[in-house]
Image 1 (tube, rainbow, N blue to C red):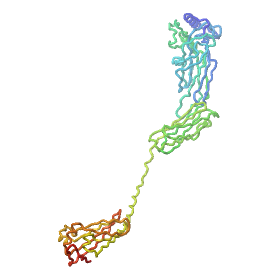
Image 2: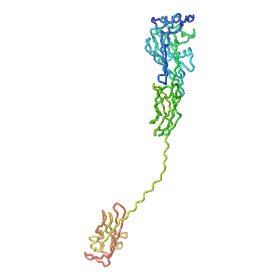
Image 3: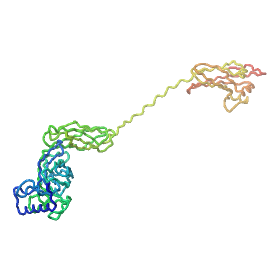
Image 4: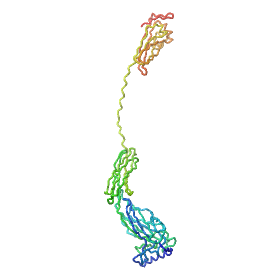
Length: 499
């Protein structure tokens, strides 16, 4: 920048003087050009693969200044503007995209950081000024307005990350990557105009065209030096692409091997050791690369299988499996395969014959019952105390003992019912275990009162025994016949039972 600052009118007068020198062809060996230069530039791939880092060191000695006054060389500090903007341009391969803005640490300016924004006008001017390489494109940038001291100490170091151009899936960029960096500047002022009457605002359109002399770096207004200097670079790049297999399929609960391929472009590199990881969108799936690390630079293509184990509960559908290779510097390349997971086949069910019914339990033997009647018992005793009957069972049982009389004599006695026999007494006997019991089978009161009027009749004793807790029964019957010559007199009944 200038050590002795000029007014806007002095700047315009100086620029008109430069134009007159051009028209008059008063050029010397020093020539007319802006006093800006690229002192050094480096280009490399810091992470083995991935973007190329271009670092450019540039310097200015005044916005709009030039080397010499037509007779001498060196940074001309007598002329130049106190404020201005820096221009940077990059020629890169088609398919590469650069950021819309970036920052540069600076020195010698009023700002310690220069922020560059995209300038399509500068990119177009660079494409016209320089012979664009086949398959290349320009990106132009312009900084904010800043000021400096007008000496060779003004400059900065611009670092640009240039991604490798995109290639078809699974194909690495073959390289090399060729790049050109261009430097320029233009003056600004708070007031005043150039020799075309345009204000010197930092927001004015950029115009790099020169209609007076081809090949110079002056525009129509004489306020812009777009093409101060340029540097080119070519980097022998390394690149890795992960090629996925064609679509695969597997049943839920099963595993499949996916054959990925690692494709390498570049020289063999002992330091190109990549870490391999795999992931899937199928929840709960297990995805395992065949190797945890690989150096793919030893061959153009390296096959690598990835095992995909589908969960048994995975719903049918398409899922992705991604294999990622990460370099020691953190750059990564990945490829994604699609796996169609289908439902497992329905389990076949073989009908089975119904088992045969269990055999019927063997019938239990009936209750063995015994019964005896005291046949010599006088009728009077039967009427008063009951008929002695002894009942026995071979196991625990319940016995019902009935005393019956046939219907005809019952009718005569006035106790008949509409049944062949008439019940005139009943008793219940329970045996807790095997054994015998003697009871007195008593007549019902009505029968005991009226039966004494019969001359002859037959009594029957019937027993029915049932197993305790079961349905097995047994029955016995005994008869007692009365003789026709039996007599009943007074209160005494003579024994006349015959059998």
